[in-house]
Every structure is written in C-alpha cells, then in structure tokens.
Length: 405
Ligand code: GLV
Ligand code: MN
Ligand code: MN
Image (cartoon, rainbow, N blue to C red):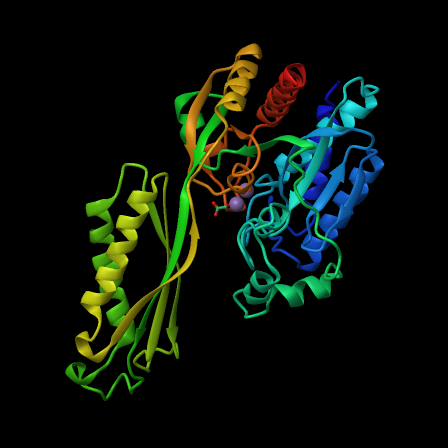
C-alpha cells in the first residue's frame, strides 16, 4: 500500500475551497458550501472504488466492497464559523487516501477501510449529530429539537439539503473492528514539547449552560441607578462571581469559556430587560464537571433577586468524558516509534466523534502538531511534512491491526 502524499495534499486543498475564507473555511453544517463539499467527497469516494452514499443525517460514508471486516477511519468536514482548513477535514481525507491506496495495491488483505465524514460535529445544530446517529443515539425527536442560532431546526435543514427521508447508516460491530481518527492537535503541547505525534488517552467531557437574567427595560438616561432592574449588569456580576468560583473547584485541566452573550433589547440608551450568556466548561473528570456545574447553580441562586433581577441557569449539553482504547493507543505509539519520531500521550481538550464511537468499538485518535497551537480560527495550519507523517503513522497502525486479526 503506497500512500500518495501529493494526492492527499491536493485533496485537502480542494476541500478547503468549499467555503474558503482567506486560508481557512467558513463551512457551517448544511449550508450550500457544506453540501457541495459533501457532494465532492461522495464523488471522490466513488472514484476511489468505495460504495459511497450520503445518508439521512448528512453523513458521507464509503464502504470497501467485498469484505466482511473493516477499520472505520474518519472525522468531519463541517467547520466552526471562520474555522481552519484541517479541523476534521484531515481525518476524513486520511481515511480516503488510505482506502484508495489499499485498493490500488490490489487489496491483498481481507480487512477493508470504510471512510466516514460525520455530519455536524461542530454543533451548528447538534454537536456530534452524525456520530450519534451512526451509533444509534440520535432519535427523530432529537432531530426535531436541534436548532441553529437563527432558530432553524435540523429537520428543515435536512429537508433543504435533500437528505431527509434517506436511510441512516449505522455502525456494524460485526464489521467495524475499530475506529481511527487522525486530527490536528488544535493546541500548543506537541509543538512546545517538540513531539510529532500525540496519542490520545481520553477526551474531555463537555457541558454547556445558559445563565439568564431577567429585569426590566427602562430609559438609560432618566432612570436613577437605584431604581433599575438591570439584567445586563446583573449578568456581568454573576459571570465575574462564576469565574472566581470555577477557580476554587477547577482541576489543572479544567477550562471554561463564556462564548456567547446577548443583551436585549440591545441599545445604548435602554437598560437591558434580559441578558443571557452561554457558558461551556470541560474536564476529563465527571466529578470536576459536577463541581463546576454546582458552582453555576450557586452563582445563579446567589444573584437571583438582587437588584430586582431574576437569575437562573439551564443545562443545555452534557457529554461525558471518554477513554480511548489502550491497545490501539499502544499500536499508534509503536507505529510512531517505527517512523523514528517522538510521541506524547495526552488527553484531548477538544471534542471529537471518537468520543461517541469509543462507547461501542475499540477507538483511538492520533494528533499531529498545530502551528502556534492555533485552531478554530482562519489562522489554523500544520506543516505539510507533519500531515504526511500523520497518515504514515495511521497507515502503519492499520497494518498492525491487520496483522492482529
Ligand atoms: C470541537 O471542535 C469542540 O471541541 O468543540
Ligand atoms: Mn472543531
Ligand atoms: Mn474537529
């Protein structure tokens, strides 16, 4: 099996044209550019000789024909707003290139390579929707309630895309012997520590909450300060309190983000009648996440009623931390050593489809360095040599899986 690096890099650059913004991409799930990218990928899989389809949730899935067992390789091709060109895309095209190289080599093995681009990993509508669907964890009711920031629901988006009503592809534990996902690190550790391959030990749990303040709109020039029911100031104070509370209960790995805030009605001369912040927090330990969540509730309860403003918190998302398969991780480590490059065992602070798959089949992830640790930004990039090294290590890992089954 001979990996064609130039073809892999050309495919990555071609995929980055869909929704291109500068050197990055703006390719939100089910937008025209995301759908065009999916269609291009479908064609590329078919040309490679895979049995390919786009399913009822938008997953692009290419199966190796004529085999009973396969390693599933993939990731996602949607992006965050103004995201990078490699986040997700690279793991999918690693799968495509390895499957293609295997078929070109005359496919002397019975172990196939199935390739998948999971829909909406980034959560424009519902984070990890494609992998949840693939593993049987996304009901029609879930599809109904998932909405984007503009209030459009996932059902409508799927209908517009022409995917609604198609069958959904599903994991076949008797066929899929393992799931492997190659990804850029999206942080600075590999680069800082001079390592080339990250071997993911586990993936953080992720929770999101809204904290909402409800006060009263008034004229911001004429209403004396002591008479205001100012939802905006109440929310700012509550967020400040929350940061201090998080500091008290955090682990060294804990992170949090106040990623989106809205003041209504949103004018300089109107006291905000309501204000809402989206708080996300992550850790590898469920117990730490529970402690952080309790602090959100306590901060809201403490602020509630002060200055005539009601404060409440609502949980939106809860994704449990996930461990990767130790045997597969060891195989990646051996493969990296075989290529003569230093590797690092590390947790992933980013969420990935692998966290869903690992509940069902042996699953592993490898990281390659991100330049400057940058990701979820147009600036995201990785050296071409590292992209090529990553696929070599992944392909070697598949070779050793093949020898073991
Ligand atoms: C995915 O990129 C995430 O970690 O939110
Ligand atoms: Mn991402
Ligand atoms: Mn990703």
